[in-house]
Image (cartoon, rainbow, N blue to C red; front, side):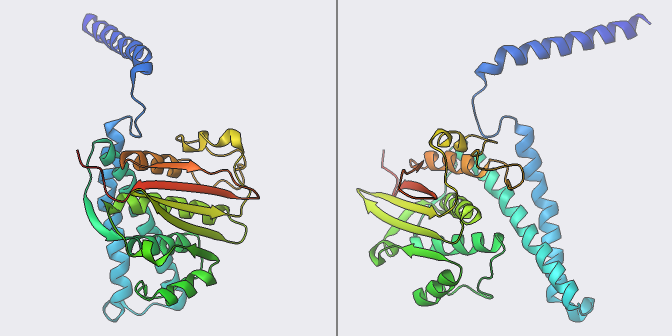
Length: 282
């Protein structure tokens, strides 16, 4: 009995001490995207099961002669499940990339803007349910890509010279940032979005413009905070969790860039990503 009371007392003291420590250290906790290593570990462990699910669905689709022919409805359901499985995997990889950036883990390489921007646009369109090109993307065929984008009300204003300029950056993180901005614009647009690009003094500036409801000036800062959204996002139309823009902002800063909302006349919003074409040498 004495041992039991002693254990209970020790347990109570432990939790009391832990509670006091949490209270005292709350202000000292750095505002990282990941506050606890357990979250990173959980996401890392989720990669395995999701990859197995994705591989299984691909196998069923590709080897129908072995596992049995699928009906049109069955095939459509599996294809939809596969797309969402891939989306979930990319979301997990994207969140882990934010953690990697906070640990100063970067993998820079040389790439062309067209190599990254076109796939980002297509993935964002597909995620939003748009009818896009079925098959390998004709990235090298500028006209074919233009036709696909025009069909989906995506307008590009990017000079040929910028398409051909080599960019030396972490391409995966660059794609994650631009993909989030484009996906956000597609979600909020009424009809169309515009993507513009310029280069000034080694800085690449990409503007993503939508014709949606816009963002109130008082919300220009909070939408880059975790779990915060513009007040125009009501409980009925909110589809995200307020992490995409927050994560993109962190990544842009880690790549020595920035994301800001540009004031402009008319409806909609303009998000500008600025990022060095090549990182500054020490």
